[in-house]
Length: 414
Image (cartoon, rainbow, N blue to C red; front, top):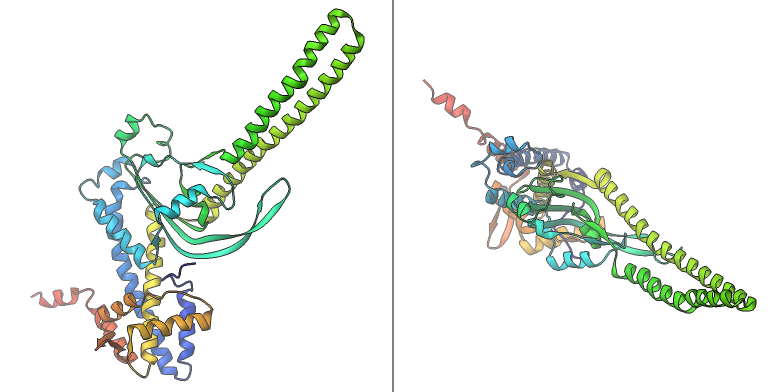
């Protein structure tokens, strides 16, 4: 699997891991904990400003708002600003966009439900899927009759889907009514899920409709048509004709033979009918499993919808930025010499590999940029150093003091 920037560990866990590195110096450990707390609160403040901005620009397209309430945001909500901010948050959260090639493969393949889903993508003006984190797990899937096979299934830890619906004119022109009850035309739907199979991504589309796959159709119709015609033409119909002739002529032997042949033909048709019923029932069972999957997604896998999804995304972005910044600072602070970007990147990735058995692609550029912007780190001749913990606490305190300048304003009043 591809290495990701995503750090699959809780911030508190990583804090404890870093504090163990300062175990020999209580003051250093206490100062590092204080620095972690104050940086966390500052990033939370930045996230608060982002959510105000993103909610204002999303309001006009929020399907959860009453149409009259949405109308009040005309001229205030800007879709381009909303999309730009959303992409920024997704990038900070270490989400990556799913390529069309991967999505097309998911539409064709199915790991768990074995069901073909028909999705009318034309009702969307724009649709995108973003994912974060991957893992593999062994799952049992039904193959033939009572045989179940254990296969390895790749899962995405987090999936966000972005759906921009066509406007009302499109729905009216194409006489589409069934989707209107699901959402309003022209709105944008956002949904976040956890643990979604990579090859079953299509199941998170709200308008996915189960259809028979080509294999299901062949298993149902080929034996049905070929077997039915064969039995009727070679057994049932000839037997009925012979019986009619024997009845008219009064030949008892031919009549008995014809009845025997007819019974055999009807039994064979019954067996064929049972087979066809079983094949159709298999399709029905797949639809039931699909419905169960949807129920699980609704109650257990769904992490946020529409404006509620922002809180999940911003919490993720806040945590990822905090983890990257504090790890970069901790490693640079403990290093006896200045480090290049590549050296720092290698040290952190090696620490994750050896200490936590995790192979990831640490976003060292973003981490160093955060240190530089906050004044905690600086680069000289391609090598990076950070200021001491005592200086770092003073520096972050100065940044906080500059967030609000009301005190300066009141001092200037007569």
